[in-house]
Every structure is written in C-alpha cells, then in structure tokens.
Length: 156
Image 1 (cartoon, rainbow, N blue to C red):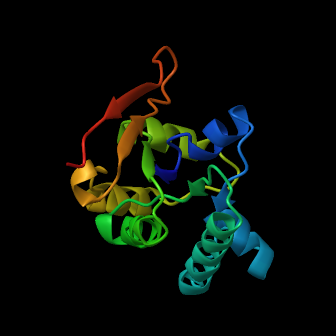
Image 2: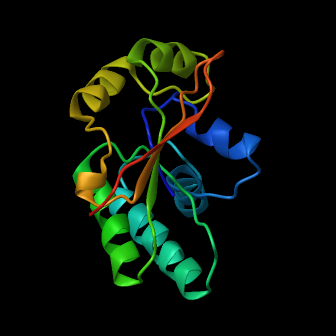
C-alpha cells in the first residue's frame, strides 16, 4: 500500500493509529545520516525503500506500507512496476487533505517543511488513479469528523 499525500496530511499518524510498520523514507534518512529532513540523499533513500519492499515481497509478507509523499506518477511508478513484476496487488492510500490544513499541521510539527516547499509540492501533486496501475485507491480523509472511505476502480 503506497501512501500519497502532502507533508502534514496525516500519513505517519495514520500508520501509528493503525499499528502499521511502514517502510518510511524519513526513517531511512534518519538511519543513514541522522537527519530525516535532509533531502540531499533521496536517490539512496528510495533505493533502500525499494530494496526493502522487494525483500518483503520475496518473504511473502501480506501487506507492505510505503510512507512517503509519492506525489507524482513518476514517484509511484517503481512501486506499481514492482507489484506487477511480482504479481502483487497494489493499492494507493490517498490522504486527500486540503493544503491549508496540511500547512497548519506542518507548522505545529517539530520538523517543519518550509511553506514555499509545501506550495511547490502541492503544485506538482497528481492524484493517484487506477489508470496508472493501482488496483484500488483508498481515500483517507484525515480531517477531524470525516471518515476513511474506500474507492474501488476496475483495472479492466
């Protein structure tokens, strides 16, 4: 399951609330250079994320979660390709949260993404779709008072 959402949209909180153990790009940065905010090593970080995913698939784990922003089709494509290569179903967990709410949450966090970076990310964002290869899109509206809902789309 590939998380998709802006910083502050609730991805990591959702994983914590559901006792899920995701492969996290932030955790990989923390492991490699002791700084989850350092974006200078993204190639290495995502190489490790994909390697761990491959190992989990080979070990037959029933569900693997990827915790990263995954804002564009290009960023999500390696996971879809790997799922198809290994004959696995793949699902997007889309955190459909307005930018203003993400910015408010982000400002309250200990590690703040600069507002200009949030704007750039929001401008690049492309919602996940079954057309790009996902078997299912689950929308997690991480806004108080709204419930998580699931949206199935056919890949036929």
